[in-house]
Amino acid sequence: MSEVIITPTITASRKLYIESYGCAMNFSDSEIIASIMGEHGFASTNDELDADVIFLNTCAIRDNAEQRIRERLKHLRGNKKHNKELIIGVLGCMAERLKEKLLEEEKLVDVVAGPDSYRDLPKLVAEVDEGGRAINVLLSREETYGDLNPVRLNSNGVTAFVSIMRGCDNMCSFCVVPFTRGRERSRDPESIVREVLDLSNKGYKEITLLGQNVNSYLWFGGGPKKEFKKLTQDEQDSSVDFADLLEMCATAVPQMRIRYSTSHPRDINEKVVYTMAKYKNLCNYIHLPAQSGNSRVLDIMSRNYTREWYMDKIRMIRSIIPDCGISCDIIAGFCSETEEEHQDTLSLIEWAHFEFSYMYIYSERPGTPAAKKLVDDVADDVKSRRLSEIIALQNAKSKQKNESYIGKVVTVLIEGHSKKSTLDWKGRSDQNSVTIFPCEDYKIGDLVNVMVERATTTAMIGKAIGYASLLPEN
Ligand code: SAH
Ligand code: SF4
Ligand code: F3S
Image (cartoon, rainbow, N blue to C red; front, side, top):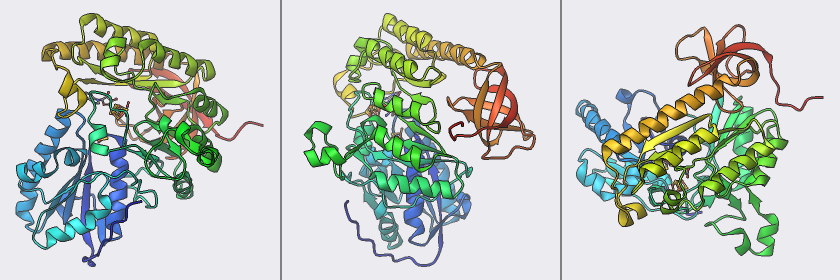
């Protein structure tokens, strides 16, 4: 692991406000950042006006994600007027993508730090204290922050993220992540289990193991990713793959629910699904982004699978776990996508019965293989229309899926009040579908059986009929 030597120049307690954008990995990173800064005298605050340092942990996945940050930075100009000492940092994927340009373009930014340089943040802030502006956007092949104790921010005290790997080696042609997060590397499984046990001791009830492509998790002693067949015999014998890691976590905390995200259709395998079937506390839910339902489009997206391969993976999952929840990501209007190819995406959604999907218009990202080699030639109005069709169909399917549970019992972990009423609890079923029911005497963190009575596109609504247990019956 790369060593960064930090000389703490700050001892008095200053306040840090972090705002996170983008995917769960970023939210999880913010907890690592809070931990690093906490060790150097920065207490976390939820009030931006009270902060001495504001970090925006940013996303670069689509252009609109970056536009949001620019708007936010304009707003923060006001805070700087009130507090001349205020330090503003842009962290995360947009920082990594734009590097020095961010300091040049956004004059009020003092610190720019990429996802692998967070151990350096106290030093970067100290440089700003001395009158400079500071940047570190070096990517690492080893950094996993595995030894750190994340500070749980904005926590409901029930669910938490645990990062199990960083970076991505896949190079899907549309995607900026391999450029902003660097090469794939897996985190030491012992440190993962330690973190999971710690969360359990602190009363958390559910964890989500995070990585861009969790199915390629492979620990063989650390360092950059290698393929299994390229490991020495000793490394192979002691290696831990994703299914092994799931099993280690499932047995370490049998009373805790465990989820994970994201799976890649090329790499998800029977071993993982059988492991899920074996342990009651491994939730029956897989996020399996297809991106498109057409094999030619998948090919130019460099996803390394076909429509048929994807459908076979769903068949495999449902043959082992018939009621497994599956969700999807879809991109509308990728380069050269024809009307027929778009229809293939719709027919895949029709066939697959996803619980829900995240659906996006293709946004060309500078520097990606698609930006270099393909033409972003689907007109904006066509992209929007295709996205609307995809959303309309998925909404109808989500409603059908939720309705299919009417009269059945689902197991729900209570996460908090429903948005609409403090008289109702909200939680998610094993299959990750939102479920709402009257509070009665149940409390946050309880695992309950809920009889589903009604359903909408976004939720199942019902009544609790008693406590549930994750421990095996008998
Ligand atoms: N690692 C995950 C996804 C990471 S990004 C995976 O491989 O599935 C989350 C989602 O953003 C992707 O699944 C994709 O649907 C979407 N996405 C990524 N790049 C995009 C782009 N350039 N335009 C539109 N959507 C994009
Ligand atoms: Fe991006 Fe593909 Fe990696 Fe997912 S698997 S992060 S879509 S490159
Ligand atoms: Fe965005 Fe970076 Fe995540 S680009 S989606 S925050 S990995």
